[in-house]
Length: 113
Length: 113
Image (cartoon, rainbow over all chains, first blue to last red; front, side, top):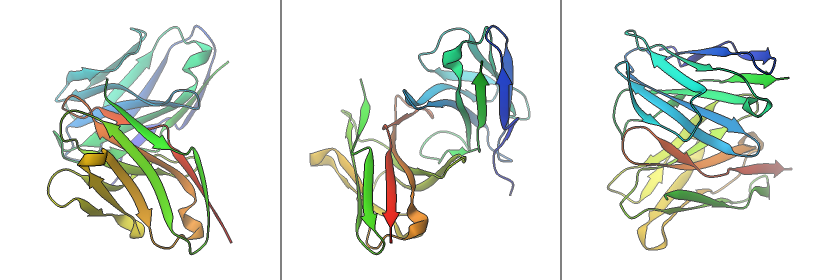
């Protein structure tokens, strides 16, 4: 079974631009969560989608948004990029509610210049 | 607020020595607890999880962890370290239902010959 895939793997953007990251979950998984990883703040939860509905949201500004499609694929968008948005963005998928495990993708490395 | 504390941001052991990575959680309810490993330029891989039942949990690659409610701890151990164990390890627990993981700051494990 294919794992969680994220595209693109690397991205360089300029301050003020916007960016869209994509995540394809493991086949059959309906929950997709997004996390931001930075050296200073560590791993932080962004949001979770389940059956196209956002169920949970972390403490991030409104510039960070996401959505989930009917095939469970998910995208996250960051508008008006800031230097501090440079991070590894990780997507994780799960069959459903806990205690199902979350399986992580390789991440998208975003650099904002 | 619920949190996870990992004692020691860096741990160094000799090949063949015992690995002990410490994790304490703060929660008023029995948690779901996880250990993940991250190799350079990769996503997170689940090592093991505790949900309910047996407090000694065995995971992949010879790792195990013991849930101690009285100490609010979930330390990760491996009897004999291999060079391939060098990586960053994250302890996490679920917060507030659904799939929101709260991560510790991580412990970087170095294994030397």
